[in-house]
Length: 115
Image (tube, rainbow, N blue to C red; front, side, top):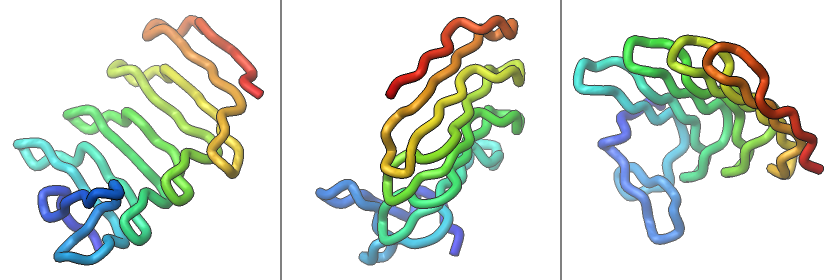
């Protein structure tokens, strides 16, 4: 099931609900023009699965995978010009392992092992 973010609410435990039930499915956020800005996957009210965001106009902004609310694997963030801005790596428990950052022009500014 895919629904609009406006059709949900967050409970006291920070879980997403739809029509009074913990939400499982895809949650989309659109701008005033109807362009897709975010597509997040949920399982029982918690981010779980592919998470994606786009800049207005459709260029990719963020992409990664969550496992029961924790970032896992490779996460990418891009500058508005389309160049890679950040690459983060997480273990299966959400612990950060490595981060690389680039200036918008493409020069590497950080390459750090975190564990």
